[in-house]
Image (cartoon, rainbow, N blue to C red; front, side, top):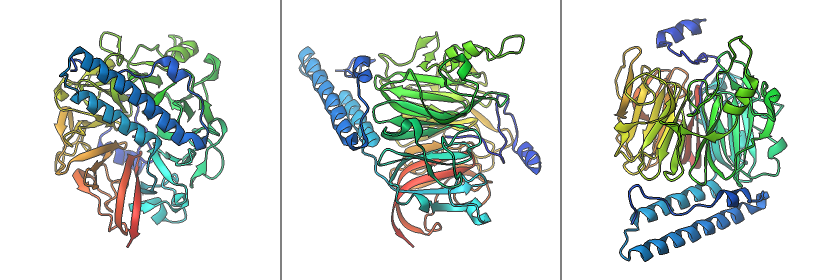
Length: 515
């Protein structure tokens, strides 16, 4: 997911601009609830050593062995309690976690293709002519062809990829430290420093920050979190070390055994191997889903100690009643919008949201912000497994059914349901997106979306003036439209990942032939 750009102005707390205003500015056996089979303890996770690059597969096999041992123990316990126990849900749980391990450690690699606006070099096609800066259809990033890219993340104006050898490459706008390196910004460059020697398996990008997740479950970050006034902040060693741009990778303390990371505009979420959802960054609008201090004292000075202790320290997210989310409930997946958070519980597939809600992007039937995670009751029974969001909208998906639902702002077609939505159109409750295909993966840009179907088709819809939809036209799409890769001079491609940025999009795919 991602957020702002020089063309689409940064939208912060109020964020109520209409499309017309943008144009004006631019002219300027399980019981219920069942407990999942035992996970590794915190002590085991904390004791994991750092593996060298050649040990990626060893880490995978050891982690799979631990999963198999836990599953075997759980099966014996269930059978000993009741010989004819129904093990189907536990088997499904095992398959899901084994699949995630496979995806994390043994990802396929492919070509990176980008499209949309590249006015800040975020497309990595160069800046020599207009065709490189405004790319109508998905185009291969040739400078990454030999890098064996396994994952990609798009930020507001920058991108990051991780490669099969565990390295990270970044490109785009580096003004706020988001690249984590010096040198040429318009083409991919390798990030070194604190992540050197670590095998990076996953990356995430926000508005101006980048995160990297190592194979051993550690998290590194660089860039900055911008507050409402646009001032930079970042994780630090003490309260006097947080008003800054972090220009190179920094090891984020207080995180261990992490298996997934996501970025909002100026905050981050992490999911650990015990099913805990964790947040940190700037939580001025409730996106951290826990109690935080106000950024300033009444006299106008910054509360540095409070910001350090309550915003920037990774802590467990809370739900209504100020109780931890996760634990026995086990969080299945996490997602970020620009200024809101989404989580899914494992045993019930219940969806919870918090943060900014000015367009109904929390799906709760109103436009009131939430400080703590609040249940989206209207999604009960829909088997939601994937959640994500843009600046003012959210998209969720059931991998079981392949159905997609959206809520929040929709005046540029973000919700994928109307032929021509009216100005300031929004839906405060989830509605089904009009896709005649079963979807397996979803991604949001600032005001547009991508979906990957089980049959390998890619659909895009939403704000299209900056060509981020990949259909060759500078126009919005109010309903999902399938990408035609033949127009991109690609006759056959297997899609591995989709991703949306501020005003651009990216795909990883294995290209069999070029036309």
